[in-house]
Length: 169
Image (tube, rainbow, N blue to C red; front, side, top):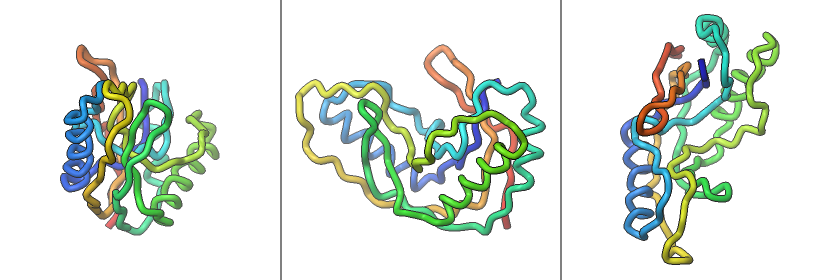
């Protein structure tokens, strides 16, 4: 199973990200637009791992107080475009804790530096050259849950399914 631990977005953040995607489409930017049901923040990408119950059990050891994040920026990594967040010590701490638990228990995961973002567009092609500025309407949410997600290849792209979650009160 292809697994990752993520924060799923509330409707306000999804709406804000979708508005950015709409602006890119209006500017005739081609590429693989991420559907709204797949918008998320990856805390740790595990990849192929056959025991999701073990991961869910490890996730129970993550302890955090709910905190607020604000999506307020747009950026890119080469041809991958994303929306990003105001610096959040809560988000950084949560990702660090998740990754620490995985490392301590020898669960393999992508150890690339954590860069909190929501991928909105892959393989972007700017058909009209330089683009005019695209803006984002800032949106916020309270993070009080982390989810174990499974990624499978569907007929029309990736399908993400929540296998379980940990909710903080």
